[in-house]
Length: 203
Image 1: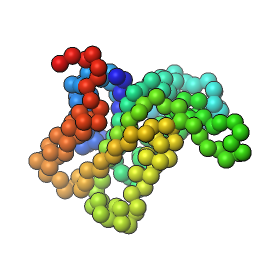
Image 2: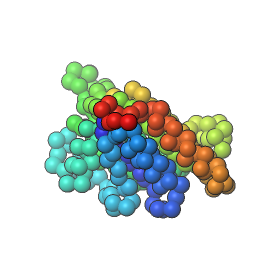
Image 3: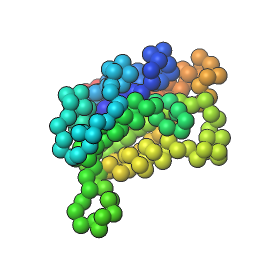
Image 4: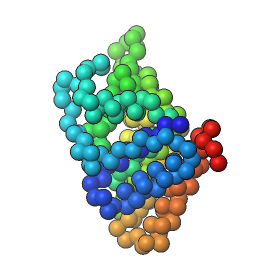
């Protein structure tokens, strides 16, 4: 089972990095083939040039690799902080350049110009782990939890992924070491439950 893990946080000492490490460890324990990308560490170029916009456009090697891996993935895990109710710019650029027509979705002929997409992603499950410094009730009550809509409806739902799980850990800035250890244990358990052991991976 091939699982893509995408991390978007610039600080290598961040809790996001700890979450991503826990995800990768749990996936390996469950026999998954992991494709892990730390976008900041890799220097991912978030700018979408005009020449890349058409479906079937020639892609630079880095983008072609990401597209191939995301198309082959059986599951996708995204890790990032909540910045202004959105993913960091580098991750938004990854979406723009990788979750592209012909790879993640297509528009069908005869839809009367409505632009209703047909999802192409092979993955059946997507998981998003976020961190935040806003209390969960306020995030929902005041801001409407835009990340839920972005990832569940605007991206993964549009691209054909039916099973979606998201968890936000907050408030990170005031959390204790014990709290963070408990959260990381929850991350591992979530992966074990949502993405069970791959068939034929052994004990």
